[in-house]
Image 1 (tube, rainbow, N blue to C red):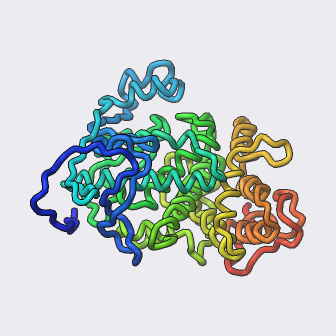
Image 2 (cartoon, rainbow, N blue to C red):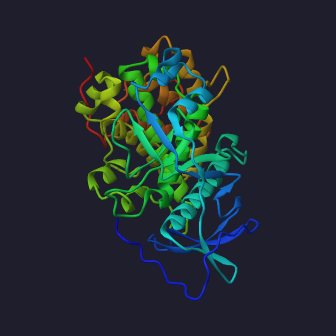
Image 3 (spheres, one colour):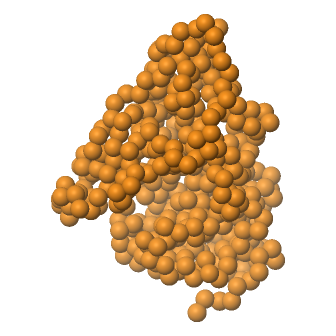
Length: 423
């Protein structure tokens, strides 16, 4: 891990304070030029600065999570998919952890972290807080209860069907409804916990799980679907999370960063492929074949899942930019997550109504659901054009029976080569 150069503070004593919110602290965050630096920020929701707990997030340390099919406890009642959330948490979280403890120096009313882990934890809490604020805006001012007191397992030991513990990652594990930040091993750039776009991405997974997947630890679609339906569901989850992760960065001094992974990941191919502003984001034949045919285990282990997700994110980014209102696109996507209306059902309703008819969960059906929740005619048209072109959807002429929400003025663009029809 490359050492972060932090300013020295002399003649001060480390302490574990508990000042009332809002608290002025130093964190690693983007400055006005976009570089990550020591920046004074305000924690608005923290109740215990020393333990990094507040109304938005609660950090815990020393957790151990093990998913092991050979564990007898995990095979009770037909396996973890058949357990309640509480039962699953009990058998998978082998060590429930304890409160973290940050150490600080106080100088002129500003609290400075006294060691690396305190810097990392404070920055992480700040990023969860900013992500929460972003989703309050996306929810049109409604406080999202699913994003309150988010459980964050810091420096957790996590093994998922492997003898090796995860490293160099930050994740949302829906099956235990917890965020995990695992130790570094090879990471040399900005730690993922300090990357506000990464935390925004993970918080977006929590929103998607709550809204679209009915807050299920393990949704039935993820155990019964395969092929296109399963692969598509996993890809839109990743693509929507990248789109929202980008959105969270827009609230920082540096402004919007559609390639927010660049400061944390050295693999340029991954960074470029996940950039939501890609103008060359187009479906190719190999990726399309994988989307329609690969089994779930192969899909979730491949980069294809993220590449297809990026096609959705890039389509929404480009459409929003063309009409000059990314915020409208963000809110429309959220509205499309869950809608009980008979005329414009949401993605949650699309998933649940097709648990036994997975062939009806198609890219066209997903795209139409999102488009139906766009109120602005210009954005609706641009979004249809982007979706059908980048994702190679079936609609060639409009009106189109597969996407009735698209206006008749929609048309396939020429910015992606047209692929031959599927066999």
